[in-house]
Image (cartoon, rainbow, N blue to C red):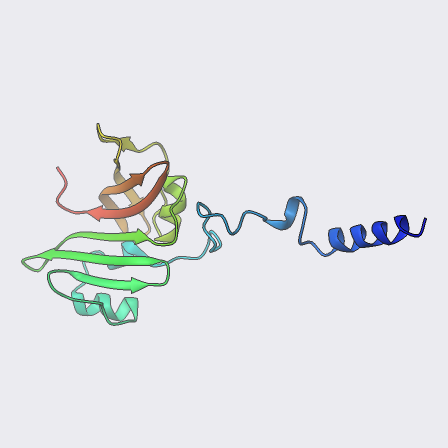
Amino acid sequence: MRVILPAIVLTLVVLGCGRFGAGSNADSNSAKSNSAPASAKAVDLPSLVGKSNDEIKTIVGIEPRFETPYLAFELPQGELTVDSMKGRQTSIGFKAKGGAFSTPDKLGDLVGIDLRGIPVPTPSGEFYFYDDVKTSRGTLKRVSLHKTGDSFDQISIDFNSL
């Protein structure tokens, strides 16, 4: 009885503190999981569409890592790039760091793009596409995703797609 009672008390304390069990989110340190809550955005990619480089720098709020040949920003959740040619945007992209996302919609949530439906894969299966994606700021002609293994790690808005 001397050993059983302390063992029971210890078990109740451990289970009661919420660090273990079904609701504890025990996989939060997994390489494949995103440690940020689903509502946390790295950047709102649609808000950058059609903006000048100076406007983009103001929206992002930090100086770019470099500006030539394209804008590149190092954000806590990944790298933001904005490509332009002759003063017109050709693509806006984001590469997640610290792991990837198991589904396209989770990566889309991180950058403010609501991806629904099934993306179209390229023959290699490395890239996936969504056409005519509706956002609160208008319709994006093409959104592409890069898949490495079983996870999506890059997303871009492509303006020069066929």
